[in-house]
Length: 147
Image (cartoon, rainbow, N blue to C red; front, side, top):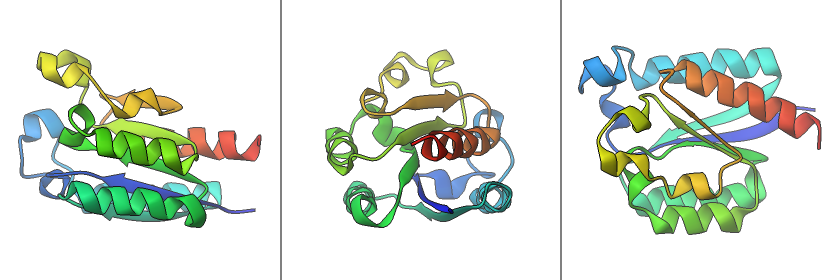
């Protein structure tokens, strides 16, 4: 049985490959999506890959997952450290969540060390670049198959 996973990306991730490549790498968000699509095929998983710079849009999509998806992978970007609204939505959806960050947020500025999303996530993957998405998908595949 194929599992449906919503992959959400927060603000400024549409600028991957252009914005601070020394931190975020040279791959674009389209490259990350292509990696996720390939991984989904390998894992017999259906994914919906989305990005928004708007907090409310991300909250709406998270709420949609309550009835339309089996799990969520989220890179909330800057909203990681600020959004109680995203935390509340993730808690309300009652689905497995994996938090992903391209950079190691714990090696960066102090304010980036706090994550509201981590309070509800089953796991957090950071610092491994786009491979973090692939690992999150593998973890969810195993988690969902064992339920």
